[in-house]
Amino acid sequence: MFMKDILAAFAHVFAMMAPWLVFGFLMAGVIAVWIPKNWVNRVMGGSSGFRGILRAVAIGVPLPICSCGVLPIAAGLRRNGAGKGPTAALLVSTPQTGIDSILATYDLMGPVFAIARPVAAALTGIIGGVVVAAVGGEDAESTAPEEAPSATRGPKAIFWQAYRRLLGSVGKPLAVGLAISALVTVLVPDNFFADAFHGSDWIAMPVMALVGFPMYVCSTASIPIAASLVAKGVSPGAAFVFLMVGPAMNAMSLTTVAALVGRKAAAAYVAVIVAGAILCGIAVNLVPNALPAAVAAASSEHALSAVHWISATFLAAMMFYNLVRPVQMGHAHNCTCDTSKPQAR
Image 1 (cartoon, rainbow, N blue to C red):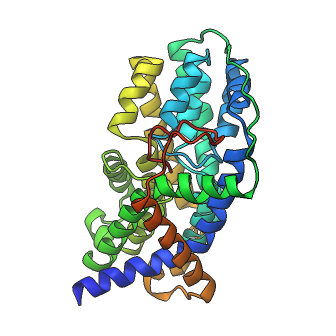
Image 2 (cartoon, rainbow, N blue to C red; image 1 turned 180 degrees about the vertical axis):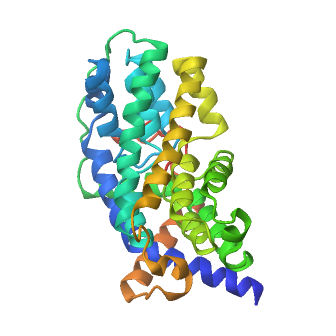
């Protein structure tokens, strides 16, 4: 009975998210195929300053890449002369959200969270870029070489990017996130966190930041975990802190950020993410009915249609195929990121 309950919770949440993930990954594949790397390098590296920071955030927010996957991009931009401010802005804003996680957030946690996540990512990215630029200074302009357009921009290339490279890289962390969500749903008593924190978000929010830091979780995989935490008594604001900190920071990303922009700038990077997450969490708690009432019982009450189960079957089949046949990173497909790191958001 115990394993049956966990598997049922896992399958239900996965099916709930599946239609939005299918569509989100498709849109991410279009972005990956049609936005060339030399353009990204040119708009970020050619002008550091505040405009470069704004461009980096505009590029980073919709990209479906995690905190590990964005590191090679940032390193390449730095080698091509991108300023520390735009580099930091990309590093802060990119992992927190993406077109796939925005759609999945809307489906599982409602419109307030779906809007708040990209807004919070953009604001913290801009502030982080400005602070890092002030702390670490700026440097040379980009001299990125021109990249020839890809000859493969049709449906096959989009499908490969969406459901092989991107889904293949996010599949494992997504499965882990769903497993954690199922375990929390089944094992943790109702209102456990509400009783533990006694309704005090001044305790709950820093705790959620501490929980999110060592737990490597992509922006999409963090959604079912946050929903299950809310169901067990965590406030919407505290859950939002987890949604920001979990995808944005981990030990590997911090050491790499320090190497890219310097230790003082890396400390400012951490401070902006944590402080920004707590402030955004407080703002979310001020919004009436920030989460739909159904979220508290999402694993058992959300009605599922044939579209949900068909989408879930397709996603599960592709995830299994990607597990059996890992993507060969040497393929010459045009994309907006260095795929040498298999973990993406």
